[in-house]
Length: 111
Length: 114
Image 1 (cartoon, rainbow over the protein chains, first blue to last red):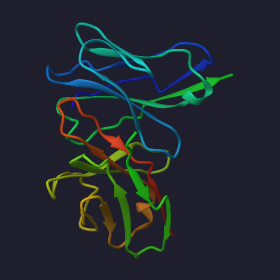
Image 2: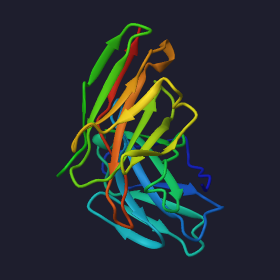
Image 3: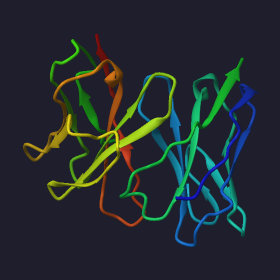
């Protein structure tokens, strides 16, 4: 599984756009990128998944450059309820295999 | 929206006792998982289950642990003789069969071993 590196923590204010970048330099050709969100004492919640270019859903956007060695999760206009830990996971067919969670990025949104 | 459910939400037990944690995966899912998260630490994989057998397990999942799908809806994790270090949040996850499927997690069971 490709190793990922993401910031330990980030701070933001309500209404701002937050971009969390994840590095995955040894991503393999068949790997895709998945982001999860976790609130305290809750299970990880799937946010978004992509392979290349840009993916957008009702919650977030995921930007993946052509070399796929990094990806950026973009949260538009965050609110206090977006305060959570965000995990970047990379792997091929890992949907079926064990997910390997790192330490994630702890996002703190302030009023 | 379908979701994974887990019971109980909290479990307190004495060291050496057996506990069974229960999960109801999303109804059309065929892949099932258990993870745990010790307070303040990372989410760790325990075991995956498909077609009524274990498909992958971590070194955490030793002989004290077992999983079962006793009927068409439940998926259980049993810890035979709990230890203090088994205290953690235990998360069940399930996944469908599609190519771009992802694992969906339940809310967790908080296990406290005294």
